[in-house]
Length: 393
Image 1: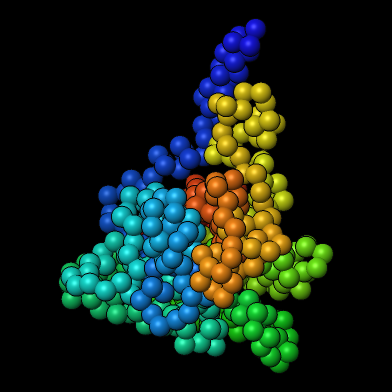
Image 2: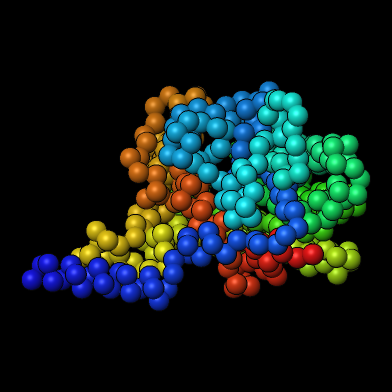
C-alpha cells in the first residue's frame, strides 16, 4: 500500500515536471546564443559587490570577507554579502560569460572584454553616503572610463566601441542612500523633503546613465530598491516587528521615480534600451509567502504532500535571517566582526530568504536572477528581460 502510494507520488512529481519545466532548467538552457561578443559591466552596492571592498580602506560594516560568508558555494569568503553567489554571478552564467572579477582586485594583464564588476558594498548614488568608506557611483563611473581606455589600448577603438555598444550595464544602486541617513541619524531627511531627496538620488543616477551612453553604452538593466522597510535588521528595530512604514513610502517613491526616468530616457536617447526588474515586490512576495517558492514552479500544496521526499525544497523562513542575533536575527553580527561577537547561524541557508540581516541567500539570488533573465510578465521585468536585452543589436 505504502509502496503503491510512493510510486503514484513519484509519477505525479515527474509528470508535473514534464508539463511545467522548472524555472532553473528554463533559465539555465535558454541562454543568449548570439554570435556577437557579449559583455557585462556591473555597478552598485552590496547586492552586487563580488569583492571590491576587500581591496579598499573601509570597515567590517561594509565588508563580507570572513566566515560564514561564502560558505555554501565557494566554501570560503570572497567578499560577497551572501552564503554563495550573487545576482550578477548568475546573469554572467546565463549569458555564457565567466564570473566577473572585482575591478579593484590586484593583478596584471587584466582583460575587460567580458566586462568587470565595479560594485561596492555600502555605495550610493550620493557621494556623502558612507563617504570615504566605499566606492560611490561617480567613482565607479570613473573606473568604467578607465576600462574604456584600457579596451581601446588592448583592442583598438573600433573593437572597443563594438564591445561597449553591445554590452549590458547592470545596476543596483540607491539602497544605501536611504539606509545611511536612517542608521546614522543624519540630518539629510530633516533638511530635505522626501520628494527632494529622491530627486537628488535619481538625478545622480540619471547623470551616470547619460555619461555611459555618451561613452557608447546603449543597453541598461536596473533592479529597483530592495524592501528596505522589511529586511530583518529594520524589522528588529520596530517594536512591533513589522515592516517600517516610514521606509515603505520612501522606497516606493524612489521606485516610481526610477521607472519614469528610464521611460523618459528611452524616448530622449536614440538606441537606448533598458530592463527594469521589480526587486522590491519579488522579495516581498517571498518574505510574506516563503513556502510558495521552491526550486520549481510547484506550489506549497505539493510541498506539503506525503511525497515530500521527492518534492522540491521550499523556503521555510521569510522574515528572520539565517545568520545574526537578536529578534529576527536582525542584529548585524553575522561573523562576529562588527562589534557584537555572538551570533547564530542556521544549518541550511537555502531554507531562508535572507542570509544575514540585510542580504539574500544564494538561493534567493538565483531565483531573482532567473526572473530577471527570462520572465515575460511586464510587471516583473520590462520592457526587456535580460535574455532579450543581451540579444538586442
